[in-house]
Image (cartoon, rainbow, N blue to C red; front, side, top):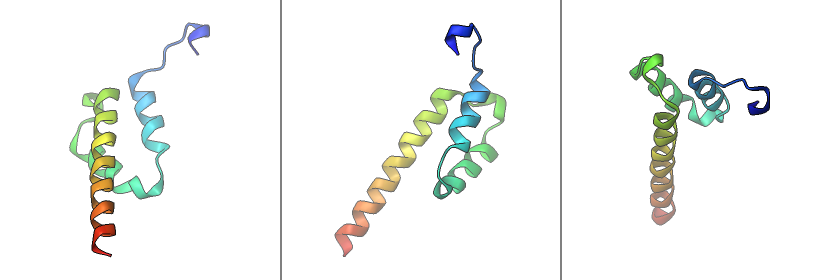
Length: 68
């Protein structure tokens, strides 16, 4: 797209990121979109939130493995 001199808006990038997530992220997406106004979301915020979500899921998964 850069070759065509057209820019992709943050909103389009965010929508693509969120819609491309697996169904197991539906609650994450819903919480994110309900708690923040769409025009206040940035790509950096979404990426940081996804990284934090992954860390939480990894920690929970590690705890479950330790219990078994």
